Length: 210
Image (cartoon, rainbow, N blue to C red; front, side):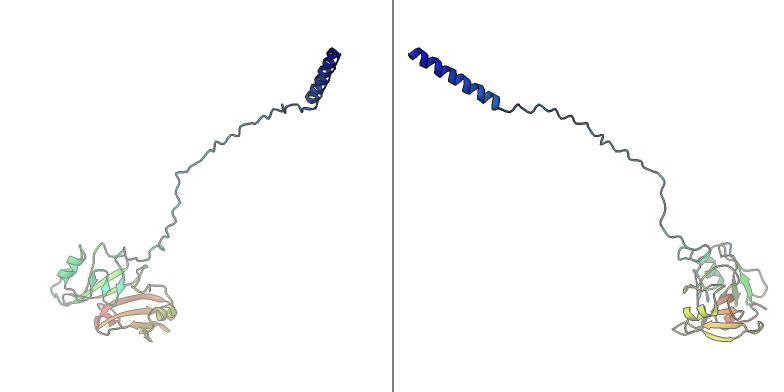
């Protein structure tokens, strides 16, 4: 009897164990394959550099040029300087030899901009003439500017009829502090054709050194 019970119990235990094993889920044997991503980045560099620095307009006088016209002269060359002082200020400056050292004449220097002439009278620099080119005044006026622009740049400029050009004008600028210095722009009635700066009375000579 005991042997039968033991055998029955053993059979029951084995059946239960079989059921438990049957209900267990098989382990997930799925294999996930990953493909490595190439993260290498190719960087291309260029040695070409593009300048963004603005360039000044061609021919326009800038502070680095040094040749800017004011009522008192151009650059380091000032009206009222003796010839010796002018030579010291502008190396190479010279005047033609003359028996009359007080005569009106024109000095020159290779360093002066083309189209600029320097009047000398009585042994002194008295005026600067800009007959051509793009040399500008300290306010930015230059040959080719309209009369309206000159009047905008120099609101105190006075206008008078040109002696030789019909419809033309002389636009005269007097410094704010007064004195004998002037800038005189000659126009054809519309635009500046030349201008000069320096001391009275020489700056007002219409014919220059006649």
